Image (cartoon, rainbow, N blue to C red; front, side):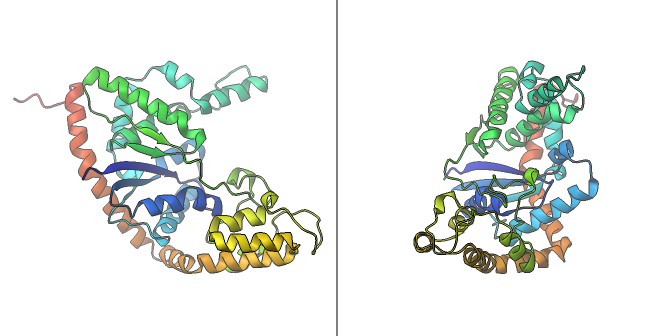
Length: 337
């Protein structure tokens, strides 16, 4: 049986929230139990340095994200779960790829173009002010993440599709120069992935400061749910569930039967206070067992480190011999016959 290799990276700059869980973490963990798939999941701590220059935040985020995935049941017997910085072949390959990548391709990257546009809009004379080489070269490092493990599919949001297209271009160019080494990856964009609204009704995002952390303590979870923005309709007045943040969050966790029952309660005019208490209790019960595992893991970081080191060892069983072939193909090899 030929397994499909699927690869996903998680940038270590924040604390996982409910939106991360339903949009990316939950489907990835489900895929980790699929024996027809060989999943590679990594903590993208080198990518984190592009946006975050707070060392303690990067370390704490790495701890919290790893603990989250493990607490939620990631199958690390099947999935290869590792920290990007523990696989040095990634950065070695990134340099080799950069030597075969046209600068013009990088000029077209959305993040770089947005930074230049912001400078121009503000009247800045230097269009590259504030642009680091990390930001500029980000797509090459991402290409190395993907190509090193010959991933067939890379689940991404729509905003990341361009980076997969660039990885395809970069891999194809390298193959053309040095021979067929890399699988050309495909972007996998789920149109069905739930996008949760946050406390203020906008998309749940740390950039909006409107998130509900996934494993926040029970009292704080209730406090945050009670802060979710609603309209001014009184109890007893019929309400539209499809325009309600409370309902959208509940729908992402509940069964079809449960959702249908709550939808009827909206039609009957459920009060906002009652719905908020109901949602809090439902989320709390849903997350309680995983929260306890998460908190136990945070108290035992050596267990997380052990899991990551085992994952890195498995990743390098593939990356080390593969990079030996790549080195030889570009002419970096022993002079002895």
